[in-house]
Structure formats: C-alpha cells, structure tokens
Image 1 (cartoon, rainbow, N blue to C red):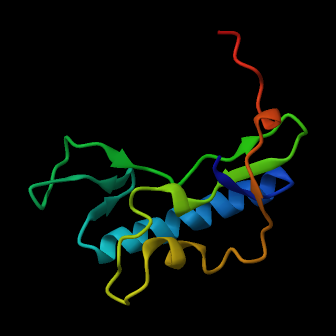
Image 2 (tube, rainbow, N blue to C red; image 1 turned 30 degrees about the horizontal axis):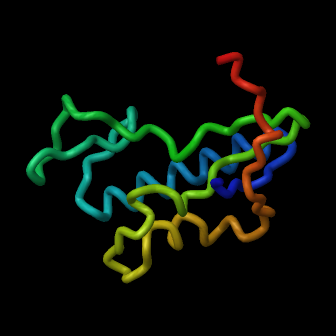
Length: 116
C-alpha cells in the first residue's frame, strides 16, 4: 500500500498540498514544461500540447475515517525518479521541506468500505 504524510489538522494538509503543488510546478518548468494558472501542460513529441491533460496538483488532501488528514507521498508517482538539472530526483526535490511530517503506511481501515 502507499505511504502518506499525516497532516492533522486540515489547514496543515491544505498548506502542505499547496507547497507540494508549487514545488511540482517549479520542477516541471525546469524540465521544460509550460506551467500556467491551470497547471502543468502536457507535451506531445516534446512540444507543449494545450489539448493534453494537465497536472493541477500533487495530491488532494483526504480525511481518514479517524478524522486525520493525509496526502499521498510522491514516491509512488511514475515521475518520481525523473532527474532534475540539479541531479536530484523529482521525489527528493519535492519532499526536501516535508521532513517534519510523519509518514504512515496506508491501511484499509482508513477509508470507507466500498458498497460494491
């Protein structure tokens, strides 16, 4: 299962999500992607494609059944191991300011049981 940053209360989760988003935008801009108010514009054949999907956020804070707010750790992303011009991987660059947040392994008990 995935790992998550544990960020109670909700305001901490929203603040952390915004910081991750800004770092994500900066990292992708450094990789040559176009970033606008709606997010990172996808590329096709190395050229920005306004009709492509956009990445608007790293993750959306979610509330577990116990009331605690969490954000998924970026290590599971397909882009996690992209190497930036600094030589750092994207995941290391995104998370360098998140060391104060505890990380927990996802548990099935965190989420409501699907009725299906």
